[in-house]
Length: 270
Image 1 (tube, rainbow, N blue to C red):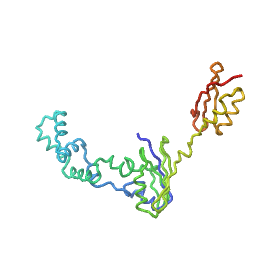
Image 2 (image 1 turned 120 degrees about the vertical axis):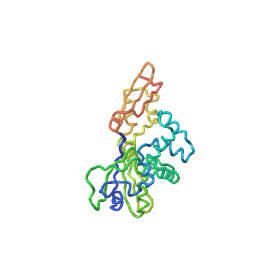
Image 3 (image 1 turned 30 degrees about the vertical axis):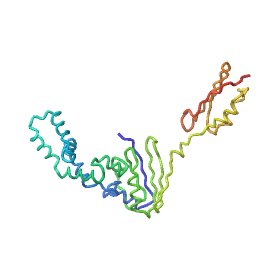
Image 4 (image 1 turned 135 degrees about the vertical axis):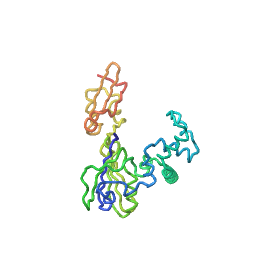
């Protein structure tokens, strides 16, 4: 199963309507339709036959066909076997595949969708219920990646429309808001960067607090003052080795993740 990306599009009834199919559910096929030639290629039931015949017809390479014939230990003569597989993959489908490669560089549905939509499958509705008319907000999911090609195509088709697209991957790989301004421009806000901004530990300021410090007992408050609010720290003292290890954690945002650790040498203990 893929990681799902939650998508929300809002702010424009026209944009939302463009994303709804005849069943009133989200689909990309209205915005960027699947080429008829690709639909023909996708109708092939035996993909191995298609690839081998394509190589033979357009690449003058009979190797895949002969390898398949010998590997599968076909008992009937090669010519008879060829007639049977060509009946499963008609010439018009092979020609459709050739046109796809010439025009789009691929005849594989996965590559075409990722290159044009931005994801491998069509929009997955969040609900079985169809959307009503005149909605200005719709939600759907996509596998792994956001449908950037679809959103940019919408902005191209409706350049006067202002709308916002929010995308949020379930494992927090990304989360952003993109605002299209209706003049061919947009900006993008990284939601994760704003929410998960890590605290910055100023090592130089810590060093000033620790190096040559002779009273470790009073050092805790001094280090606390040097750290941003919300951080926790621990001191590991070793009088014999004259070392002091400062470990900084963020318990609130990261559940105790280590942010910083440093061992200072030459620390004098009273």
